[in-house]
Length: 233
View 1 (cartoon, one colour):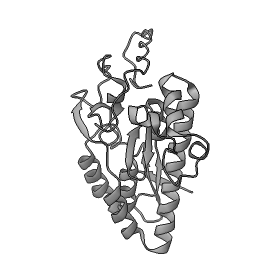
View 2: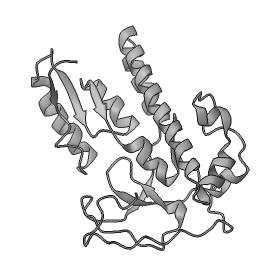
View 3: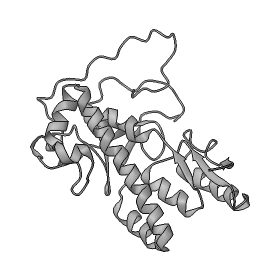
View 4: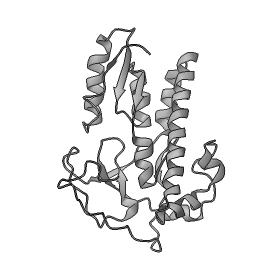
């Protein structure tokens, strides 16, 4: 792609989202138009759509696979935890209409079972789905940019995509490496996709934890002498 400019390296490590957008707004207009604008480490689907609207061209992000390890799936309406009890009797795909391998061959109920018994195929299937979701999002963005309809696509996306609702942040400092409490029920050990770090998420009354699920496995001992960088790994 030729030479470009990184505009994300300083706004992708836990800053509040308004500050991130303010930094992008303060820099991108002054960059040469013939240089690729690269937002390193960003971002969520909603952030990507907003950053494209601000002139950013290129992204890289670990979220699709990182949150898959917690059983969190992306859909066109937001994210949800497949480990929740409601998925136990949901025999359709992760998202209706999705053409990824996971959605074509496996149900929510089966993937939920795999995740809750710590079968690695479960996180692989959610990773496949999430990666497919991101790739399709970028295809849609490129198609609407080429057709001159990105503004309407952006409005429709924002109207339908609901960010994960937060109740209480599990740490005061989003850059802290302190581990969260170990007794948080599994459906509450989610990832704050919009502010960085791990948070406590209010459980969905329609998707409660199943008391018959196996308990969380104990955390492995820390043999490094320091707190891990990724407490949800």
